[in-house]
Amino acid sequence: MHMVAWQKSTFSGNEQTNDCVEAAAAGAAIALRESDAPATVVRTTPPAFGALIRAIKAGVRHE
Image (cartoon, rainbow, N blue to C red; front, top):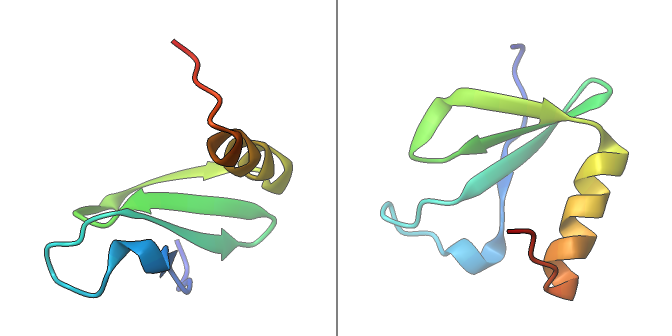
């Protein structure tokens, strides 16, 4: 994967122990990774990522 600018939530804090999910624009996709396992990257589309964020904000749970 080419160089991308990873971003994490400001709710995560700035300490080394504040592991979180990071997101980055990767061409036409959105790349996601866990900060404590940065070598594992998953990609999704912007509409699917937007739907995920809206569901999280709405408190939707799928079990």
